[in-house]
Image 1 (cartoon, rainbow, N blue to C red):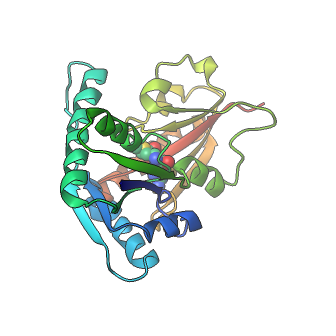
Image 2: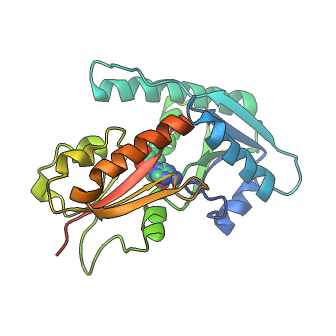
Length: 252
Ligand SMILES: C[S@@+](CC[C@H](N)C(=O)[O-])C[C@H]1O[C@@H](n2cnc3c(N)ncnc32)[C@H](O)[C@@H]1O
């Protein structure tokens, strides 16, 4: 039986790798590295560095393939995702069929944790449903960018007994402002926090968390919203990409 490992590698700091992940890295015969065509090679380099740093010996292969691009203006958000997932399923199936022999272990290095806003698990399940390839798969958890954000700002994700919501920028923008009490926002390319700049919310914002370029800003949204927007735009322009996450919290 072929085995696929989904290894969470943390969200930028190569020291945020678990012992379980290191052991998993050392089991793999081949790594499938998806080139997302952005991020100025930084994210690809981090994955290669992790392999060189933690794998004993060099008896492994790295297969780098171009990740299918998402349609720019699909008919609907759902239709766009469906097409993209289907293309990725076809790609994964080809990798498993052409690049692995019976009994071999392959690994995907997943940014952060495989369970949080990552479609690799869903796509592998889709490949199995297609019925052409048979394989086992295992998930090795990693440190998410949400945990990295809380650690770097030295805050808890929730106050006593309080729920915490994790959502995307797109979904957060659809919520009523008074529903937002303690929310982590990811995947926000449009600084949606700006529309709440007149509220009494606090923001804890972090970009490039865990990397040498990390930026942290926190404070009342009223006071720091414009600064975050400016710093974010300058950093994105300079590096060519940005990944940022933030927590919005209503003070008691
Ligand atoms: C596709 S999701 C992947 C999340 C990942 N699986 C995790 O566990 O953190 C990408 C989003 O995660 C967040 N993110 C990932 N790495 C980050 C980092 N180093 N600094 C800030 N945000 C990050 C950003 O909100 C980004 O838009």
